[in-house]
Length: 389
Image 1 (cartoon, one colour):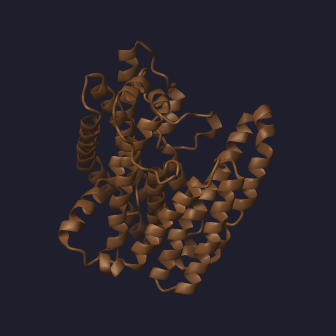
Image 2 (image 1 turned 180 degrees about the vertical axis):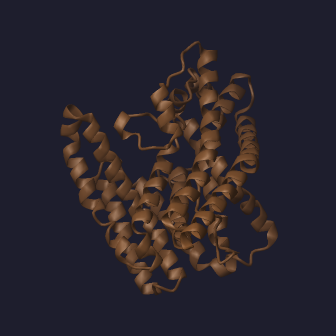
Image 3 (image 1 turned 90 degrees about the horizontal axis):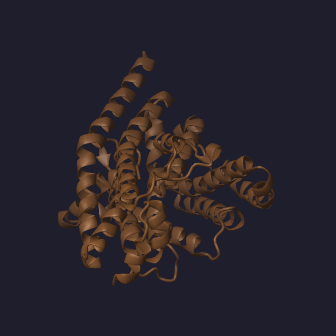
């Protein structure tokens, strides 16, 4: 998942945030390849149009990653870190660019790399459909809606790659930051207060949901989407609070108080809204992600002095984290399925899938992400210069 411009400020890399991207990317890949596909092969097989995947998984011998009693822990933990990193670094771009420059920068940061990853997913689904004698399961509207990363609720569109929902959250947060740009540049506290309507919005969506499902699916989908976006914004703003502390705007006591309020809104909104799950696993997993981010933030000077043999692997994963996030899912699942079908041991199938998606991420990073990101930054700076004249 993308962060803002590289995790830097004043030309200096913010080591803790940059390295956490590597941790987050690792957590998400481990979740999908070492946990989800083995426990929910029916869902994965349907996602990638691979009939019989559940049978192959059932016949394989593989011990899924421990979840510590928390359903979907590794996935929630990794996404939580990505969201907090974005909450921390996006204000850097907002402060340094005009609104128009920020939009241009975000478009070139997000879209080209995602489009390549989605194209790989679509190719895998088409291949799987062809080999299984089925038809490609997605309509043109669904492909375009996913490709443009626009909210899917108006057309009730399915996710093709399983990860576009998180990019919708990112884009909603970008829009929120654009609206709050003046206050963010002043390190004003009012943006945090505007997150509190998440709780009543979640409650209203949950209360009206059962009625709307039977009468107006479009309105139900919108209420679900809007309440979910507001819920996640509460969590991303926790990262922004840390940025305010980083800039000296908030002291430790004020930072922790603001965090407590935002996390409380996030947890309540999750439990009373349409995102509600049967237990507290999702809330606890996100809170553990928050705890890891907080520990890294307060240990940032120590992290900045880590030896290179520790830093280099995480820096590599941080550099390719976004293309890895966009390309790994459907491609990796497909590779694991075919490797198992041809008799590969389950551990070897997972290992080869990890190597393949890392290689694909490196190629996309070098050929797509780096040049388009650089072009977007240059275009944004040109807009800044023209508006300053």
